[in-house]
Length: 537
Image 1 (cartoon, rainbow, N blue to C red):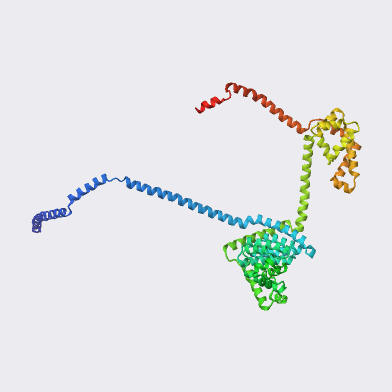
Image 2 (image 1 turned 90 degrees about the horizontal axis):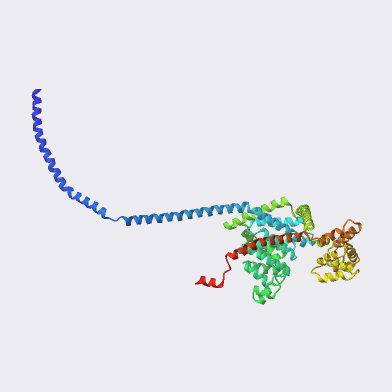
């Protein structure tokens, strides 16, 4: 074993020598690597890069970055503002949409209800001679309301125009069908609800004249409803009724010219044609009237097409208008339930008016009596006792005063007003309370002694005569004292006292301000023209 250890020691010595050789070889290899990498020049390059970096001006790049940052900030502001506006618009649009279907219909429904009540009165007044009653009118309006709910056309406008139709002498049933026919015609012609309303009004005026003139037809054309469909339908109806449309057109050269010179487009031709557009007749009805089977089929198809055009929703705008009209009509019915129909509303609201109006009237009367007694002159208070004819009372006073001479007439001539002359006359004893009492009595006899025609010519009413009779009776039995009114005439009125109080206050204020103004002028004399010129220099 020891020999083996010895050999190992010897071998280590040999290995150490070999190790040194290997290290030398490694160092040689590293030198080659170093030369290959050229580290010295690389270090010099890095030193140059550092020097170049120190000499590089980065401010331009910084400014560019700052500019980009500012632009991005501005863009951020614009973007945020735009998003905020879009959000606000969306919120406001949503609020309007909700309001249009919830809050607004309450108000517009009430307006529609009042329009309907007014139309009921007009329709009844125009159709009662035909035996039309309130129930029939309500049913007709309900039919129009239901039709309006299905279309974009406004029930309020329909209601208003049905009143003009009946005022033109058209019966209720024909008026309803004519209104629906115009709306259907407007739909098939592509006209708006406003254009339909204009056409309804213009045609109602034509109905009152008994025929459609060229001016009336121009309004229909301007509303976009005077196309060939309507023209052909009118001519077809005219030929059935024998008013001579085709002959007039052949004679004068055109549909328009036939309206200028001919009179074939009568009220009956117009209303019958509109009823066809409204779908008021079945094919059997049309054949019975005298139309051929082909014509009846065409008219029925035309009515169906027109009704579909009016009731089928095809755009969002039509949908929205239909929803609003439906909500509005619902509230119209609600208000009718709450307040009542024409007769119920008339009874209830009249009672409310009488009750509340009575309270208001009594309150106003009490207030005015208080103000009149405290502020009005004695002369006005005397007239308020029932002397409505002031001029007649003045003449009566002068007539009674002349019995004692002409002194009072001279006072009247010299005074600015009769009340001033009366006050002076009472002060001087030229007239007295007895004079005034006698004047009231004489005026009463004059008024009651007139015939009915003379009272009417003088403007005397039964109420005026009752009032003067009551005053004269009160003066005679002592329940009314002319001496009290005489005292009130002689003293200043409350109004005059108030005016005098204001005048006295103004004079007191002037007495205080004047010394201050004078002292100010002593210290600061008024500017002269020379001073002004000096300032310009």
